[in-house]
Length: 454
Image 1 (cartoon, rainbow, N blue to C red):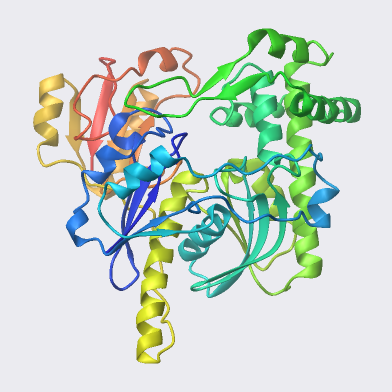
Image 2: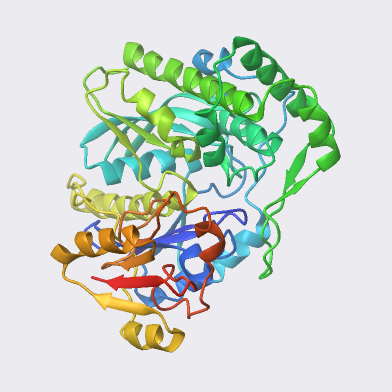
């Protein structure tokens, strides 16, 4: 067995298991046990579900030390702000110590290589092009890249260097903070708000220039806070005075600013995608990976570029790195064995599901009885009609079906459903306090709620 761990002390801690045949057998995020959104602390709860004695090696999606220096390619230079040069931070020693303490061999891989490889192994393609884009990472020399990927091989074609060009993910994070939301967490709210804004060239121009100013000022509008212990600190620390000063420089509505940010993001990723079509293979699918591609609207526009197929890595954020690292550790070991045997590396099994997490505990009904929730155990063919009736009656329905899905999506395996027109829903969906070992996360304290087990 091979284990992949994403742990960077910031967000999206997760683990993944790959068996001796290269098949992904298990993947889960720490947040599923702690109920802290995007929990970035050491994944002790997730690791507690893994038998480390059976692990041959652990894949880590960060380089051991400082990544090599990279020069940005022209396609990215003309799209992103140039920064006064600063170096890539090494993977912090205290985090390395926690990985060493697991007592298994460690295999270190480049962060963006693993974004590309995660998308590849989940896509099922034999060969693909991958576009990655995020906000940067420890020990990784790039923030965006174009890759050609085959099994056991990740080749970088073009990249935006960390510290040389400002990350596109940082731009969208800045706008998120500028509008009063939490950066690297609430970008989806900006995407939704953009639908109410007007397309304005002047707003786009002023916002892009303000972003350059925000990134070159010595006083930042917010700073990141890492998870170094078992406490739950705020993910970021805002400088509210500085943020207000920046916001005052934009004489536009929040909706128009959100629309400008969305338009700028789409224009830039589309420019890169068209460059890929013109300069790389025309007959390969394009895969997308990295936190920027949680933006569904941008992904829809990319699907129209004309690639034979477009695939978005389901766990496109850093939690997905655990999959890439586990598979890369398998490929590394399998490749070494085959070199000794004089054989070619064989293709790992295809992956066709992200239902990779734990199943409900055996005493789920006992716990539901204890907390006083109404529940029904349904056959799969009954679920749709019962859920529709519950929602039409104004109830909140929680559904638990088989294994948990992996990644930032609710796919009907662990989902809370409610009528969207009911403004009281947000205030009513508090956790009932049941043990996290049971059905996490579908609980609701409201009396007119129903839990479905299928």
